[in-house]
Length: 263
Length: 342
Ligand SMILES: Nc1ncnc2c1ncn2[C@@H]1O[C@H](COP(=O)(O)OP(=O)(O)OP(=O)(O)O)[C@@H](O)[C@H]1O
Ligand SMILES: [Mg+2]
Image (cartoon, rainbow over all chains, first blue to last red; front, side, top):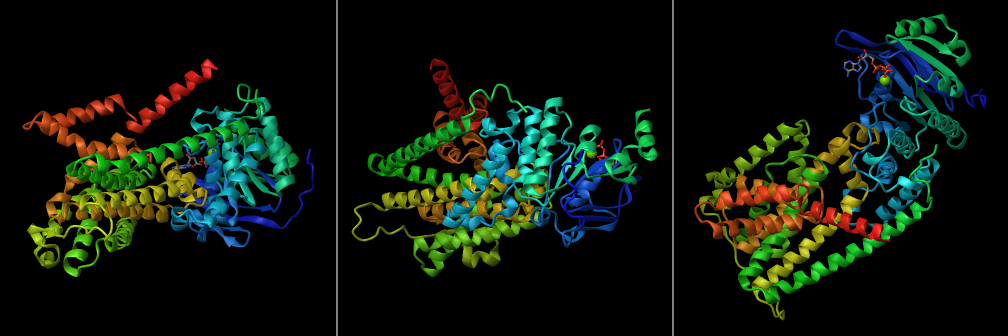
């Protein structure tokens, strides 16, 4: 089902020996893997496997007790959390983290923050530089709003929107930072069948149109297996499989992890 | 993905843009009307009423700054009266001891209070919610005593405070000192509101609101939490300081006990009454804190604060979102009625 061969095998993102502990719980146990530039990498595993924890290490919300994360020439663990967006990593959240009082458009505009330069003084005086920058961001936000079919709701507060629409707003906000790497945490969670189909075509066009690398956490197996170039499976914080979707799907450890989780 | 209910008319983007434009024209018209009315005040009111309205303008400036901090950024300050007092004293010292012109105090106070607020906000960053409130509370408690402290009395005048000379009217301007000062404050109010309005609708304002709404996501968007929170504290201290300086010019006198905890609380009352996280709410809040205590005193000398309290509770009961919230609701009802009539 792959539309393209992974364009570039040079790794954009390298996890090396990442471990995270919460008290007695080992959420991640020496996890290492690579994601090539332009790849779509699926990240699967039963509930509590450590998928979101891995994202939160990349976002510098959690600090791993050891290991390193290299991204595009940067050591992620040396960067302040607010610098992550600027080096080119955008994300969505498993439980939605929209700016609740803002409109759809303002949420997407907030996503452009890391690309901007205007500050307190230039904004307070509304200098031409600040206004030009604002106009440019408004245009790119409006493009994304159209791309994700949000035109009809762009001025509405996000709190008034149905769940599936909010998920698209979050995606638009993440795209507004023009990331090289996009982290999607269960984007299909809570979506209906039709919405999942739409999401799949969106993910494909992210790579086609924006040459974006995607790390995709998903329980929706059909979706992961169809869009991913490679799949990494976690269970109890350990990597149990890493390879082509067809291989991971029939990996005995993966099957056991999912069967075990169902019992 | 279909969005039944929204998609029937897929030009709403354009419609929304048009509506937005219309809202802007209406808004500018509204502002011009209010400014025109405000210009009439010193000519139709008595000199005492002009003085009262001067204080409304001053409070409006302080309330706008506090609202940027509390309403838009979600940091609670119980101590903004301290920055108000700091601004008043800096202005008074500049004029009393150094004989500097009254207008020169404003930029100096603005810069010093911005820096002071930023520095206070920096360590306060580690304090969330209630703890920040307590830190600002202690600032409010300490301020009058710092101002009275004997070691500084040489500058601050200690218990006695400082007297400053009335603001001179420029030669050739046919206005009384009260009237001139009113226009001076009005001009500064307009400038401060313009700055606040610009800030809040730009990249900065968006970051300030994003931090309040969802700090984790804000950081993921690249927003530097520490910087924006401290700067927002600084900006709101700057507003309080400028308002304080203007109050010193207006009262022609500063004394330590005018900048006590009660002032800080009054300012909070003002932003709640006007409407949390609104720009124009500052004006309504300022009218409330300037006039309601006086009116309460008229109603009952012995229980004026009880009357004030009842008025406050009544306000909050009738307008839980403040005056601006009520106006927005009415506007919603009217435009809804218009739409259903069409
Ligand atoms: N902040 C935290 N404090 C304590 N424990 C945590 C914290 N975050 C995660 N954990 C624990 O770490 C483990 C991994 O959690 P994580 O959220 O990464 O799982 P997940 O793979 O994303 O699961 P799901 O599919 O349910 O989202 C779980 O046991 C979880 O309870
Ligand atoms: Mg998760």
